Image 1 (spheres, rainbow, N blue to C red):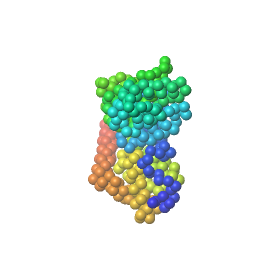
Image 2 (cartoon, one colour; image 1 turned 120 degrees about the vertical axis):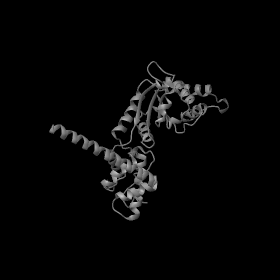
Image 3 (tube, one colour; image 1 turned 90 degrees about the vertical axis):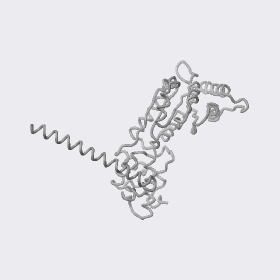
Image 4 (cartoon, one colour; image 1 turned 180 degrees about the vertical axis):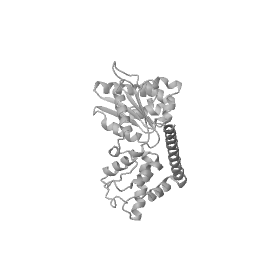
Length: 303
């Protein structure tokens, strides 16, 4: 609705995990580098965790773009499966034909291991990416570990990328999963964007959509960080609504009060007030510490 009004050729704040819009903050670059490094190592697992909306899935899409051409990828988007269902899904993802009547853990495992051996002989790497991996049952994770047992003298024939919320870290601390945890060759926890990165993030997405980076005022960008806490998905939701409201008012830029209105519509007035209150508390604390330090310095100089 607002695209032509602001001269945009695409929706810059869609929440779809489009790699073209991925803002590579220093943390996102580190996350991607850790995943790529881990997949080159001999171990079977790499892990990426982060809070909801920090960009984990988008990083995984970027990872898929950078995998070598001789790589076959199996993607699991719904991990709330039994061990048998998971193996069946992996077979489907890898293009393995099987007889449903013979479905069993051993049957599926044999089919998958045969496919891994065949890929290896043809010089094809096999990667399994599991999104929302914090929902995996312990017995399902153990089944994944068993799949990675097939290896040459130099490497595993199956590399597994586990992507999930912080609960995944706690899950892997369970005693029955210690063997799997020891096989994770690279792990990274993706944090929210900093205050300066929020502005760069918004400008980046506007730039990709051929938009004017001055659509959002400096005060609005500051408010965006205060209210969203640097979570990219929340930034997208609020910026999209703010642009819509600004369009209905026929304003040239998004003012701070319009962004607040958008935040209240999406998050609720109580949430917005609470988050602004936290930032005010942090500001007061910083001022107090600064004044205390200055007072100490003055007292020391006058001593």
